[in-house]
Image (cartoon, rainbow, N blue to C red; front, side):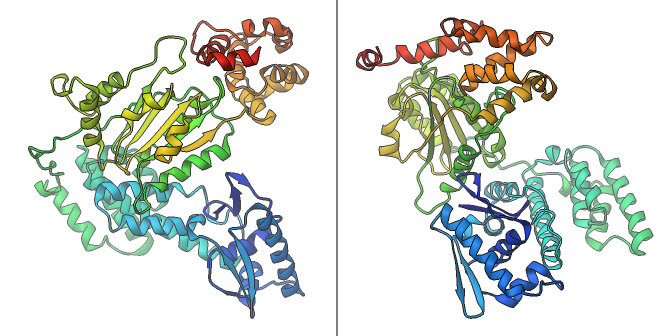
Length: 533
């Protein structure tokens, strides 16, 4: 179970929200989660939930709320308990299950790590924020705590910005720092970071102008001048102090060459809908590699052709790209592709080694040699390796890194049980999408107005697609290509089961439902085929 306080008050099991009841009951849970595993006196909890306006029977009402929370949590998991002690309540939970405690742990670790690792940890911590802490809950104690936590978030953002400046990422910072300075116009540390990024980006005049703007605002609003540190930075920019220029990284030694950072992820296939539980499960893999004695983290996404495995993998990979600052490698293994033979591990490794900076003359000719060089290059680097459409475990094994700093995401129409047994891979099986998610997919592609205009036709279309994302995508593509074409006509075309696969065909064999299903069937052993007759 995971608890959300940094953007509402929620409890989730495998990404699915638990019904916690009304806002007061949620605030009781939040009041206990803030001090997880520690006793919270009943009087203090009443003050947290109601402030200076408690109900007449506040303690009895509180007892009722706690009792209902116990029931909701017990129905969802056995790992969380609310117990009563003399004059107090204790919520027992793994602190890492509560986003604010996980945020603080990641920030603390980032502040003692080297810059590369710190950038990753800070990014993971800040990604936990989904909005204002506690949502729109308006109670004095929560309001004060919200303001305090937001200051912690701002401090972490400032620390991350310093790290990124030291790493030479001033160009990407220039896309976000101006908006942040507007939200915190009198923050001198933030102003100095923007000035330094502008200066290193070749915009010295803009850096000096920003100082003057801040100086005028401080004088007008506070009757004060910028502090000594910001004044020194201003003077150094005026005199073009050479020390402000980012020093190049030391030349690589004979034993370690400088590596490029590959960004090989292809674009996601289209608008993404649903899969909340599956995304939550994949999110947990981000932290699995940080455990003591951890090995490389492997997740396998399985399911029939057209179920949306690649769609989910690429959506998650793009959403979490910042957690892998050393790059992302991607390979289409063509395990079940109707467009060609499966890719060999040797071929994939050659492409990976090129992406990691090796010239053709430096790449070994044999598969074991390529695999050894590949594992050496990615060792201790925070990287994501996406292996799409794997035929079997044998095809994948040479492509697995040996470093726990890496995360591997594999999609396949087979279970790849050997990877689960021998390498601790985490299997994630995809099923068809729900009726609500299927409808949302159509709405994203066709617009709510067109979908609402023909409810019976939409219901028939979705019934014909049977929750298969590829089929829904093909239907949506055909309908969007002909915006004036009635959906009822398309539904009628799909009503004939014997011709349905023809109606769901495309010119692209990878997106053609008949080709996708046929390639899965061709890959079956003779015995399973016979059983299906």
